[in-house]
Image 1 (tube, rainbow, N blue to C red):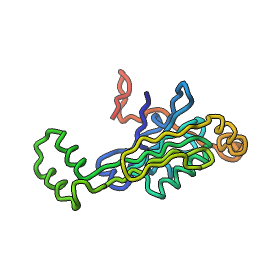
Image 2: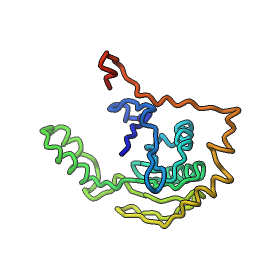
Image 3: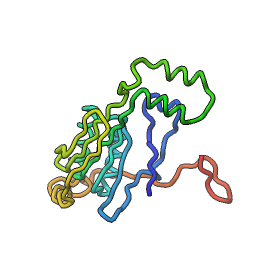
Image 4: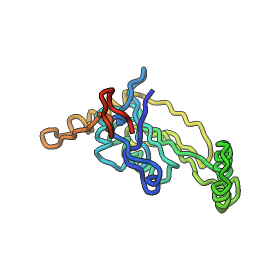
Length: 201
């Protein structure tokens, strides 16, 4: 239904991945409301947040490797700043999951398998610790998971978003467009253009 490519890879991610572009910085309309999301440290990019706030999300999905305390704080701040609900999603992954995932690739790379197997700890030791939570527009945590797999649910009132934006609307009455403007380049960025059209890199 939608595609979002992380705008700026973080730390060692840059060894493997390139940057995304503004063509995937968008939310999608659903029958229940507008749903958007950002990945990990994109939540500390003020202009990326502003671009998402301008799309008036009802629900924002904040994807994290796991939701540590600082990530929950950031997700709660996003909920209040955007006046939307936030699903902060964290993974639960054990050492044995890493090895099973590698084995599922059916590749013959014994050196790579050996490096992964040399990770310290027992097979059931948590490497990513979950911490997912659901957050309301007033930054209240509505439901939270412990350090294990969980399905979270909370009853929400979409009208809380409308009410909240009456006193804080960062894309409306609190935006000061006479002082601040943001231009978002939403065209895909390509390296080569041919008569047949752009070729994605």
